[in-house]
Length: 274
Image 1 (cartoon, rainbow, N blue to C red):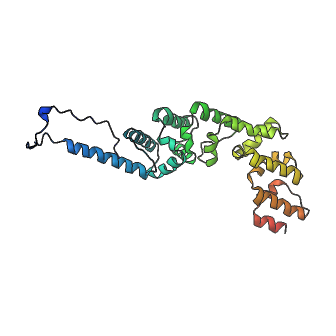
Image 2 (cartoon, rainbow, N blue to C red):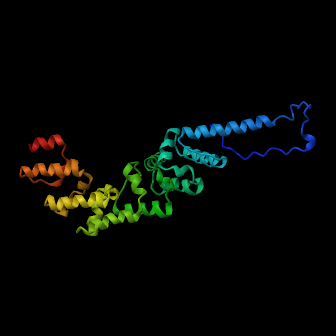
Image 3 (cartoon, helix red, strand yellow):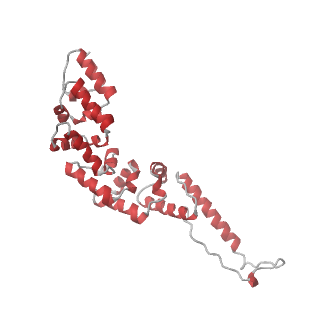
């Protein structure tokens, strides 16, 4: 286990204490060289250890700071194999995060307010390391309350979706509901669509939602009511699933509900409508 570096103050020797050239140092007056050697070895060991975790530190102060973060995270269930992922995804965790003011409040929130057990809290963070740098007061708590008001449950389950939802600003979540309202859905309908398919919160309006709505209405001749009934429509690939299946059915003069058109496997779908 690496040893965090401390400030080492060496004694100041007076001129009478400095040994002369022909004076043979006694065993009592010779601890300085081993002390310096231990200092240098400890620093190298710590640097090697941090490097093995994928973490870079340079000055003695940053090494001590970083080791404190590592030890805190280890106390929360993280192991050495987890640190390269954390360092790669969110390097500021190890350069600017304060254990008491930043990291500890996040864990306290996940356990006390999200009702996650320690393993769930750890796994949520592994799926979205930026959670560790999020403000509890300005990000995590408001977002949790917003999602709960929509009716989302089991947010403590450590899935990629839940982890990234918790780290999404409320305004970004609300903008997706407003987009659906602009398409003719009521606020209640738009909220239910997002609650039934919360992955919508992570989709781009311009690169995902809007093009699929336009294709649904203009090319497929369907209405938003079908999306209201089957919001998972937005989760399917336009190029790999929606367009080819629509054209396949159109050539055969077949029209079926969106759910049936998209949920069936390729084998079942193309065997049914050859």
